[in-house]
Length: 423
Ligand code: HAM
Image (cartoon, rainbow, N blue to C red):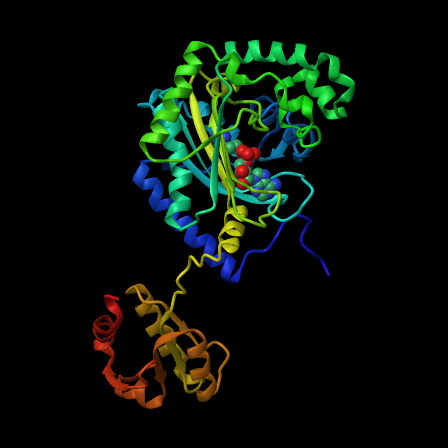
């Protein structure tokens, strides 16, 4: 039997209902914040991610799904959404519009990682990107979106970690300090960190292997290398978070696994007992040089992405039921084959008039049809026999009270409206 590829999954049943429900919540939330929906390609030119996400990141160096198409182009399944949004922003010259441009997206991302609970090779992100303003209020706004989304569904066990990586000048000074600090310890570092030392020493702090070593704990702290402008930006972000009563923890070791960040970085983790090691539910930060790096005009940006699968795991861990089951308004069945055109025509009219309708497609007997109507949590059952067709008077049964009504065909919509229309 052909099985799904490792690290991917099928979504159906309760999980599908939950994802649709969360998407609905997100759509409504994004209207409240005035973010506009964007959809960019699932695959892009490989070069975009090399330039955008960064050559030295684990994502680009080890985890991308790269392929050549039949025209010999180098393409990559997107491992994240920011680079694609930046490309879209530049290619469509969206920078000529009034800034900030506030975008949101929702879709599959692909990373060749070792699958485990909360870590997949295909996963879904909800993300936002806001371009064209360096106002720290926008950093605080995007953090508030994650916090408020979790609050809306009643998720309590979350912890917001923040840090500042400063501007380019601060980053360069810090980089120099790290190079000097780690020089005597080079041989104590893992192989990856030895490469990072050469290419991007900041990422040593993010190492999963060396992370807990004493030399890491004693490494210079970014906060001591922030210049005045960076300190001020960071102080304002914290002031605005406090103004919104958003609790946060300052974590000086937080550097993030992508190269494009400047100033604010943040991770929102699940703070729930027994939650697995993949506990970062959503993360992001400011990226004031990325648009230029990808080939556009100098434009600031800030955003985040949430992993939907981890969001669902957190809901399960806190035993939060988020979906109300959609009941079926009407179930229709025919007594025999000859009445089927009538069944499908009534179903069609009712659906056009806003009712949720299903019909019998497997010619069940009367008893089994009622059983099936119960299974579908049906409110009204319509039975069509010869008599109903010839008289144009329908037998409509309230499936909860078992009351039976005889309703003229032309009065059916009015009848159903009066019974279930404004529930
Ligand atoms: P990221 O930290 O790589 O950031 O991913 C964001 C979120 O996606 C993670 O916190 C996690 O919930 C989810 N995620 C990542 N990898 C996996 C995986 N293999 N399986 C399941 N879930 C996963 C970014 O992607 C940035 N583009 C975020 C951003 C937007 N920064 C600024 N704007």
